Image (cartoon, rainbow, N blue to C red; front, side):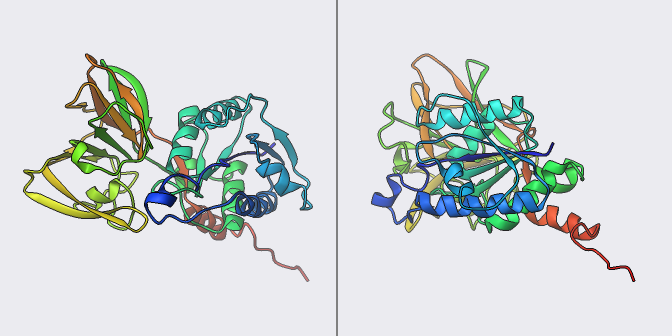
Amino acid sequence: MRTAAIMANPVSGKDIRRLVAHGSVFDNQEKVRMTRRLLLGLEAAGVTKVLYMPDAYNIVPRAFETIAVTMEFVPIEMPINNNQQDTVIAAGIAETLGADVMIVLGGDGTSRAACKGSLKIPILPLSTGTNNVFPVMIEATVAGLAAGIVASGRFPLAETCVRASMLEILINDKPADMALVDIAVFDDVFLASRAVWDFDKVPQLFMSRCRPDTIGLSSVGGQLQLIEPDEPRGLALELGPDGATTVEAAIAPGRFTKVNIRTITEMAPDVAFPVSLSPCLLAVDGEREVEVRRGCQAAVRLKCDGPWVVDVRLVLEQARRVGLFVSERTV
């Protein structure tokens, strides 16, 4: 049985960045329409079963009730808490139930939550959030088709997916959390709005990837280097007003800021970089979420065994190469 899991976040695309920046709103009706197209792509690729995370808006049930598909739909049995932990739990259960691929609708935070739940299931992250670096913007129809091909197991993962690097947080030398894209050290102890705006309070920034054409914290490093997701290196920056290098970066939709950089250090895999503050907050993938308590020592290290990420172009090129969707009429 070819099984796909769908994690659709009903609250992505609606956070405070719509008020303090110029982010667009991604409503749940559009997520339903997007999910319909995903489902049709999955069925075209031969998926027979869909597991889905329940949510208060019923995104997946609303999607499949208006289309004619033969796949079996199974809600993941779990409590709904209406927070990111729902995605963590759902992904873990999906792994237990044998999901062959996991499609995530949300932003960087939703993708991170899914990967915290499972790093074994290949993930196809589709952007419906705010500062999206990890998820991709692509038509859901072909995304579903590509995910279905991966679920079929027809090709080795290395031929259809990219093994992404990630960042691991250590507290007192023990793994405590992770980030897919970036970690900012924040000189504060209050979560507040979670999003990071004031770089005067950020003395350190760590990135597993960076490009000049992205938005968010990693765009700071993107003005200095190009680091692709599967490269075995990252970037660590020390920030401060006395920094000799100044970068102007788009840290949110329509919002630019100048960041003064004191040192630029390449991160090698499995090397721990100490966090300079205690207590402090660590903003993971753009949101202040991890608390470092007074007296605790935190560090960040690059790991190369992150999630397998479905590369839609690569999958469909492999399908074209073997003629998966081509047939010849015999005379």
